[in-house]
Image 1 (spheres, helix red, strand yellow):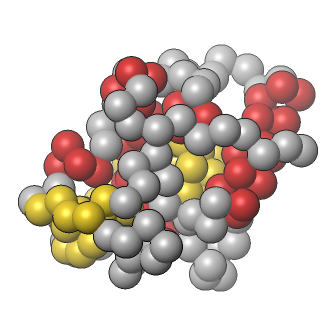
Image 2: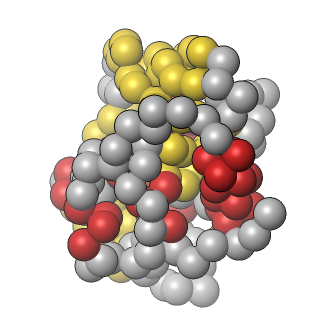
Length: 165
């Protein structure tokens, strides 16, 4: 497993739609593992493949809750309800946070790293992380949808770096 370089805004790849993964290969599994290592090294809560320069529909999230680390292939939000509003940050946009409105609860379907179908229902931080990472797969950044964007000191992750990534 390796630490990958995180792509930073304004890199064009962050604004493109990622492609579905037709088959889970050892290379896809290694990429998911590398993404998890990279996310933890950067002290994030989520990471999408475009953030490491790969236009594939892969995400990893770990909100520090009972779900633990989730590696998902071709994730899709199939249900959402409620609303939460709060600060978000992004490993690809250091130094900025934004106030973003998201669903309070989401149900996400996809495949795990072995190719088995999984469904996760998430609330709070995990819900926010799923929505943030799936947005990345669609070329959408939190700065595109934030109601307010503001600078945070680089030496501090900000109040919700954990909530975005």
